[in-house]
Amino acid sequence: MSESPLVLMKDIVKRFPGVLANDHVTFELRRGEVHALLGENGAGKTTLMNILYGLYKPDSGEIYVKGRKANIRSPRDAIRLGIGMVHQHFRLIPTHTVTENIILGLKEAGFVINYKKMNEEIKRLAESYGWKINPDARMWQLSAGEKQQVEILKALYRKAEILILDEPTSVLTPQETRALFRAVRRMAEEGKGVIFITHKLEEVMEVSDRVTVMRKGRVVVTKNTRDTNPQELANYMVGRPVIFEIEKKELQPGDPVAVIKDLYAMSDKGVLALKGVNLEVRRNEILGLAGVTGNGQVELVEVITGLRKAVKGRVIIDGKDVTNRSPREIMELGVAYIPPETLRWGVVPSLRVVDNLFLKAYRYPPFSKSAVIDWKKVYEKAEELIREFEIITPSPFVKTRTLSGGNIQRLILARELSGIIGGGVPKLIVAAYPTKGLDVGATEFVLKTLVKYRDMGSGVLLVSEDLEEILRVSDRVAVIFDGKIMGVFKSSEADIEEIGLLMAGVKEKAKAG
Ligand SMILES: Nc1ncnc2c1ncn2[C@@H]1O[C@H](COP(=O)(O)OP(=O)(O)O)[C@@H](O)[C@H]1O
Ligand SMILES: [Mg+2]
Image (cartoon, rainbow, N blue to C red; front, top):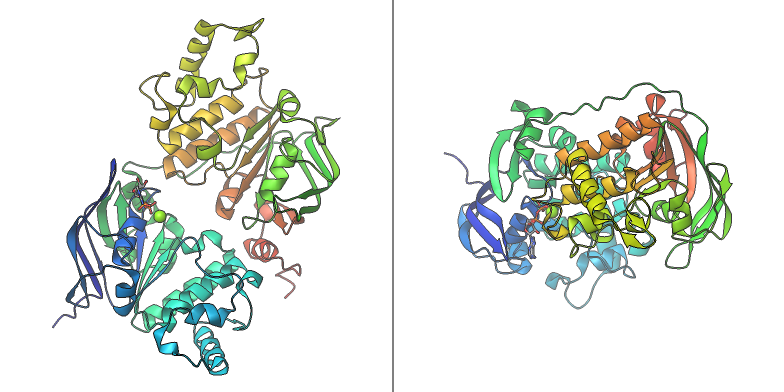
């Protein structure tokens, strides 16, 4: 007698204009398992789970919950069937308390709500998963990790037995990630089923019992986690063998190319985002800036590149004080900038590949003389860059929007790093989240390229939310929290535990405790 699975999704098809997001997908979740759903960006993971949660209607296919055919037309239906989903972007009300958010929309709460009793219940529920939550705290007071706990508790409070977590670790510190993994394991022990969406291989290996890999809308394979390994999973995910190692030779770092002194700056919201940052990036080194997103990283790179004003402090590049100079002046000094969200801000999608490559270089020799563009030189150079940076495009003349994300990022690297502006190797490369949203292959290319320029003499400031990535390629790692640098370490001697605590703003040394 075999028990029915908690969920069986059969032959699900979902088409969006121009994309087949789910192409005859079959997926099963058993009682008591953590099932990782692994795939690159755009593989169709979120779509599949939005269908299970009643947010999208499949074009065809069937869903069975605990052996019974289910017709899930809305999240309400899903919740009634014991399905809970925590999205990548939280949906809590900032001015409400934890308890208010959790009971929001609960019929059973009735008209008279006994907050004292509810607070108690919620506290106990949280504790049973190893979390400490103050039920009276308002959402805006909580860290990203705590908000996520509230989202999960909200589902559990509704007696969810099927829990969908969509890329839950992307907003967490290493410690918070571990606490989440423990809670997730606990849920599985209780007989619940957890679907854990991720594109990170280590997480699959650490937390899951089984793993289903998706690529381009299809399921490639489902395996027991213990019968596979990261290398094999990466190959399934990308569809070809992937090289993990990034070769990096030992180099003696040179003189500082960028010195940041006691820097203060405001965020867009008009509050202080940088509160006295001190940093140095030297020639021939990659300095990784680790931290949870939103702790001043973007403001820092914008001040360095001239896009945001400093209210106090100095930015010195190659010995020159460039504080509050224009982006153009700073660029002409040999500063290359890979902005965050390049796919949105780094290119003009409606322009041709060649135009985006030369967006900045058009006005400089040898491509332009007395304001006349030398098109022959431009086209020749474009062809060369496309080869050198391995940009896959039918020609330099197609619209940039037709390229994949990875190829658009290569285009930006080519434009910013190749020296078509000013010539030569950039003195300083400021790379803000350069691999975010990229697939494994494109990520490798970006990281290798940064190492290559570091070898050629550039100083690189690499901002990333992926600590493992930082430790893989950086020579030193600085940790930023709440607009301040909490510590700087040699990557070879870095202690992940300590860095994690610093990322969460905990100053005492982990080792001391
Ligand atoms: N609401 C939508 N409208 C149009 N296209 C969508 C929508 N949601 C997802 N897609 C497309 O479907 C594909 C799969 O996306 P998604 O399920 O979000 O992938 P994943 O979660 O694996 O990154 C992508 O090509 C994406 O652009
Ligand atoms: Mg997704």
